[in-house]
Amino acid sequence: MNYKYSKTRRTQLIDRLAYKVFYVIAILIVLILAALLIYILVTGLPHISWHFLTGKSKPFQAGGGIGIQLFNSFYLLILTMLISVPISLGAGIWLSEYAKKNRLTNLIRTTIEILSSLPSVVVGLFGFILFVLQFHLGFSLLSGALALTIFSLPLLTTNVENALQTVHFTQREAGLALGLSRIETVLKIVVPAALPNIVTGMILAAGRVFGEAAALIYTAGQSAPAINFSNWNIFDLSSFLSPFRPAETLAVHIWKVNSEGLIPDASSVSAGASAVLIIAVLLFNFIARYLSNRIYQHMTGVKS
Amino acid sequence: MITDTETYIRDLNKEGNEIAISTDDLHVWYGSHEAIHGISLAFERFKISALIGASGSGKSTYLRSLNRMNDNIYGTKVLGKIYYRGLNINSDKIDVYEMRKHIGMVFQQPNPFAKSIYDNITFALKQHGEKNKEKLDEIVEKTLKQAALWDQVKDKLDTSALALSGGQAQRLCIARAIAMQPDILLMDEPASALDPVSTQAVEDTMVQLKDNYTIIIVTHNMQQAARISDYTAFFHQGDVYEYDQTKNIFLHPHIKLTDDYVSGHFG
Image (cartoon, rainbow over all chains, first blue to last red; front, side, top):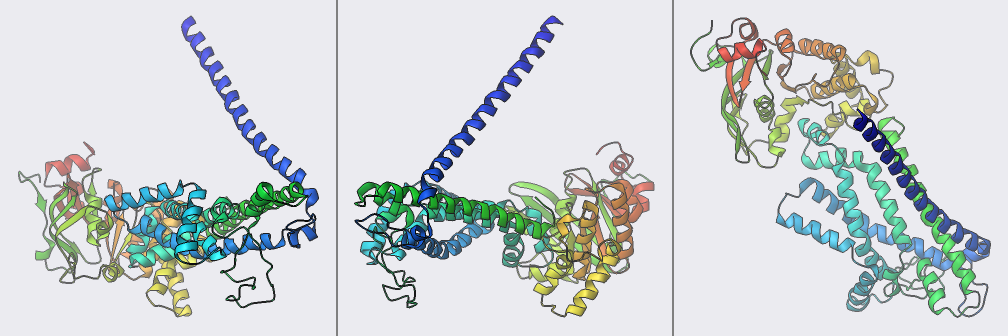
């Protein structure tokens, strides 16, 4: 009796203690994140102005902006997604719906895992050798987009495969039992049902691509030559749409200004640019949540 | 009258009634495990035939073989003949997708698509080329009425099917299956995930459908088999031990094992 009583008390004590430990750890993580965010925003936000967001960067004097870099970041992101989204959709669908469980499939999965753990600077150097030098693409948006594709492809493919795997097999059986072919079932039933998760994963991957610097230093380049926003000829290097021009992105700009910048206001430019970058990535996260909730609601009529 | 024979399989092929589908020495292998040991049964047209038996007796496996849903399970091999309209459909030469339009299926778990109620029914029809909006509207109303769901959903056809209750979702799946106007409807424990009221509704639906469809249903629920079916096959460990009219199976089984099972001694 006595023994039982004390055991219960001890269990309760351990239980309470464990609860408190986990609670403290969780709070700690949130605090670290909040401190980082607040620090970046507090130091960066005062430098952000319309002029800063749209103005040209200056190589030697103070008062430069980040307009071209900001545009380059978004444009590079769009180019990267244009290349990597279709490929990752195809690869993810194949892996989830068609690949047999054999050694080749295992090999491909392992390769994707290894690819996703490659340091981005290695991806950048690989891109430099292959795209910049071998394919003669030079320092260009296209080289950068291809390097970022290598960087994001494993992430996106795994995301698509996982999203499709969460669709219950009975959905596939329902399609097949109605006389639909496998490809009809996959494209018209399984993929739409997985869409909220696919979209979320893609936007989150977009956030990572947007903030990537190391893979771009040797591929998209470190210079942001002036571009002409009224020139729509994509084959003209001065056109803002040209994928063949070198293009320093926001993340690369932050690195450059800090490591070898010659401008006197380097610290405030990098603080402002960092804040803009963080805000953009946060926006991606919120948009991802909002969109996937909307799609889910639209599909199910149920609020998640 | 219990006899000494091992099995009692009534051969409907010899009785002159119209046969909807039949199997001849059907074997199913999952890898190196033989789940079905050569089953020959014939199912009469416009009747409800029930497949009963304990879990793992092979009744679901057998049912899923009839429209070749087992093709999709990796490592499954189906040997033997399945005759439908004089054609052996267990053959590589058969267009399975076309065949499944004639032999539909309703599953154990309600599996409506993540689409609207209306689209759930019309989706496959549209994929198969039916574009006429009036015709589609007509089919939606008719099949939902047949599935006893029309009154509950007629004002919300454009809302998502995923918001339906389990019983409603299953009746939608039945409506979706009969919208294809199949000859044969295979039902794999269609009411096992439902509450008694929904079960009643699904059973009523099945009895109504009997006029136009041949139904083969797998069920764990012996009362259900007794209530709605005309013929019953008793499965045990991958074999059929007895196949006869339902009233004989439940009241005068020929085989002792059947008697033990239907009177609740095992299973």
